[in-house]
Length: 51
Figure 1 (tube, rainbow, N blue to C red):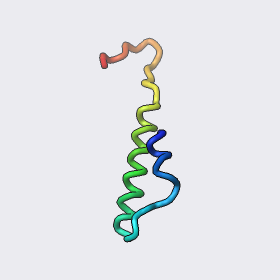
Figure 2 (cartoon, rainbow, N blue to C red):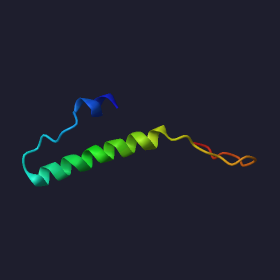
Figure 3 (cartoon, rainbow, N blue to C red):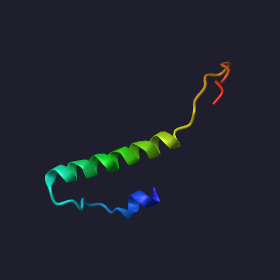
């Protein structure tokens, strides 16, 4: 999360196509952080699969 915050809150690219790409990269980073932060849920009474 620290690295994402270092990028700042604005887009640095000048052309629209590169701004779109930059926004997609930021979204992918946030989605990855969200995925990594989610707990692995298991129903009660069910055996958890080996990781």
